[in-house]
Length: 469
Ligand SMILES: *Cc1c(COP(=O)(O)O)cnc(C)c1O
Image: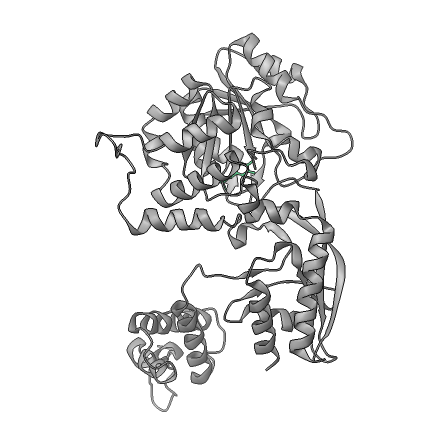
């Protein structure tokens, strides 16, 4: 029997049995992290040991006890940091999904805090003490801002689309152009949402071209609605054509079918500085085409919290609100309070309070001023340790909004001393107490000034000084 002692044969021990016990490793970690929460030490020890076991099982070397301890300590440090925590977005991508998309107006953040830290009149009318409607405030604001007959708000735009499809087309067919069966951010695919909504997808047209006659030919007894999806995160150029929303809305009226547009990134105000692409995101203009329902995210171009906004005909909105799924997809009170504040700011002409709109609408000249100021601060702090320049760069809207639209921008470019790489410097900036997320390009770390928020220059300075220590 292999592995068992026989005569003078050497005992072949399973190397996994020489790994320490979780408790023992956790106690060791405590020496390096005095006062650290025991739950984190135990979890970190378990994770590092599990990883080592998996490596051994895969035939790799076991590694030293020191390496195991170092890995466990790194896991513990990661667990002990609150998450999500503040970072500096120096990427130039305004609506960065990995960095939380829109930044709330300070007043919207305070409104969320008030709703969270106190009781709130969420579902009562304070004046009468009677039962009130959760969404009454935002519904009125959304109607005023968009001209829509009625409005509904849910947890996010994926939920909005799911609810709309499930309510209006369950068990029946939904017609969509092949050019619009998009995937957004890897976890949201239009065909998969449709399947989960219980509707059958009827694709029409070709990837690059879809004509009105393609929709017409596909309409039959089982058709429930016509869907248009904004292509959010890519652009089609060349031999392409799509059916305009107004044409599709007219076809819907002729055939008695509802027409929905998933706008993805919808805006409740005009964004003339951003050009024609942004005009196609303006919810009011989309509704004016005669479409029955539009839906979009609250935390993209709108500039508010995560939410899914649905705008359209009253009968349609009412049907959606009565679907039992609406309860499962409803928005929480903190987001609702933040959305209410954001919509009020837009309705009252206080859009300057919204950091996301400011970042998008700042002129290149304003961004250059900001970059020059940051460069001056860093030059003074660094005293020649790094080469600091201001460079012209291109920033992006991001968040699946306005693909292809690049914003003229300016960045502070840091050139590390010879023998040091920009990647290593960028990694050290990410490891700072307030992590700085930057771009690396041609051997330089670029800090795009377009996405910087108040207080960020101080954080960048501290991160750089720590990185060079
Ligand atoms: C972003 C996006 C979604 C998903 O919105 P969430 O608010 O992230 O759920 C859906 N459809 C389109 C076209 C989008 O751009």
